[in-house]
Length: 276
Ligand SMILES: [Zn+2]
Image 1 (cartoon, rainbow, N blue to C red):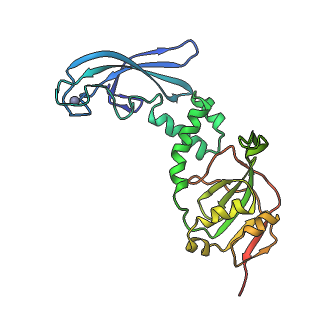
Image 2: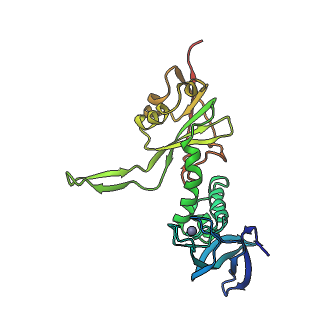
Image 3: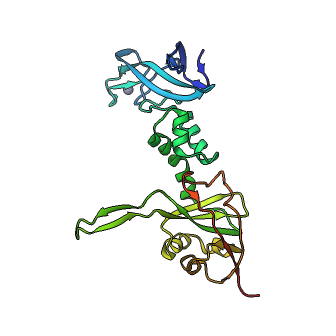
């Protein structure tokens, strides 16, 4: 069997059920191994090594994969590589998680709106592992430009606690992390959260808006904001406040950021472009 629950390139040697009901699957490489430096087929074993990798839970049970593999000496004297360890696409050499476990962690946070802590617990990984998987998936999405937006929502989001630290120059305590963030949301389209910045001052909001293309800003028809002076001052030029109340921010599967950044429900007002 070369496929273990969808892991390609390895064969199952043994399966053990542990006292805590988790499952340990022992696998060996089942593909032809060649030197990654020169493609010479592996022929001389240097040492045997064991890789331990977490996989996605199966039927609610945690899966640990123990990979018995070899480190090989390259027989090509001209090869700079010298030696190499077996590796297959689904089980990269230095990774402690299967790629599909990383994907599952990331999707559970971004698409299901679960907190990183919940996802980490259900997948049997640390908070940092789940969070890293999540950010590795969403950062490239968030780094890209959002699609056109007709109705933009700008909303403050409470994010943990403020962090204080002593200034090394003056010795005075100052805030290094704001407890408030500002989120930008596609209110009428499918994109959900478009971006999130630290702080909720006018400058924090305009800094994000100024990074957008003028044509993207020109396409916005309405901007829904909390009618505080900071947000009022940040609304793009050519718009006029108009009172409105709206509900919670709709979830968005593609651009939703950190799920434990919970939107704060409060009264909102809507701003519409002025002029004829
Ligand atoms: Zn080689």
